[in-house]
Image 1 (cartoon, rainbow, N blue to C red):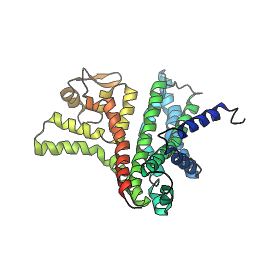
Image 2: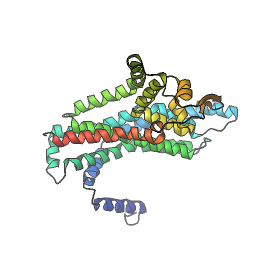
Image 3: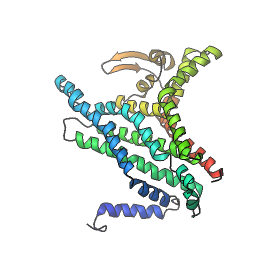
Image 4: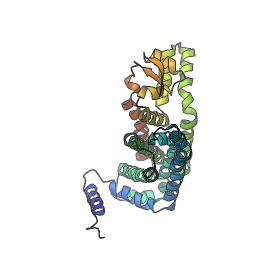
Length: 334
């Protein structure tokens, strides 16, 4: 079928032409070339395979051969929410690592090879170069994520598992945004660092700290202020919760839990060392045991812990590294 006859190709061609002719798309040729060059590399397909194996298959096997049997014996219906609960502990640490691998060499590697000077001799500014690299590499990051979700759907559709479309699609959307955030983080460091090796070391160092140690930072800071500034227990819990939410990994986890539980309060309580005090003293609610678990009823969640605020904290890890990386990149000698 020719391009003229294929509606998908014709639509993509129209989109491509519209972006090219846009007043604000000077970065588009860079992102398009970045995407085409990288997608030809076999390692992107290796990453896609790894993501499918580590992200989709274990959860699905668990649903079919373990959780699924338990639900069937109990006579209860099984939905994709159980799959999301399986996938969350895998996606939260795995996707940032994939995004860092995709983004860390975007600019630093070209600077090492000298090809960056050639690229900047063309009519592109450093800002347009950074924007093009970000868009192209972000699109590449979304390939293994999209393949993983599509594989999941292909396995689930013929099964007896009921698809909870709203929570499943929201989980997919938040996960894609999470991958793009860490791609921006890696590219910002790549723009600021002199070599790809340093970029990888810095990216992985910060990633390990966020993954392993950040969860203790809020509680530790709260205890420090309690010991030396005589703050009360409620203020201490405010510090703990706020600092915890500043981690992109914690922000992603609590957003996904909120999608599953339908309650931002319940998902935020899991980030504190004392859920009961947080509920009753900090939020003014009552902690009750229900059929679905512990609930904090009649509580008011302050705006800084609400859904919009948490999304904002997550996106800060997209904006700040890119802006800081651009500032260093714009002012450094190549």
